[in-house]
Image 1: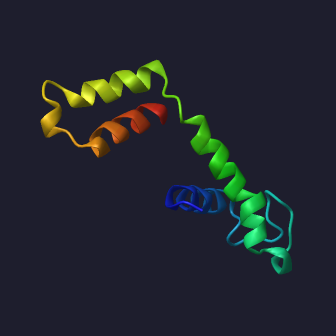
Image 2: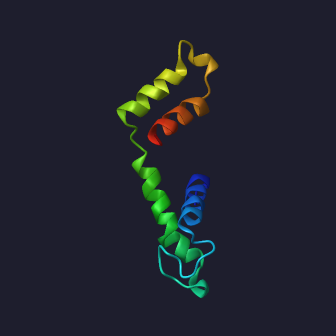
Length: 91
């Protein structure tokens, strides 16, 4: 599992209350069944789907990414562009 998938899955589990609530509100599995397999079929699967949906940026995301570059790309990091695009997606 990639670091980004792992981070997204952890955020999904946290956001859905899966870390502290049994049975899990997403998959309805009890504590004895919460294994790595659950992550691969539950929150990890949702994480992969969410990340895949972001593969093609919207027109507004592209605009904000381009706008983050400004006049000279030499002074802009890829992280600045990525964050501008993600911030637009979260609006």
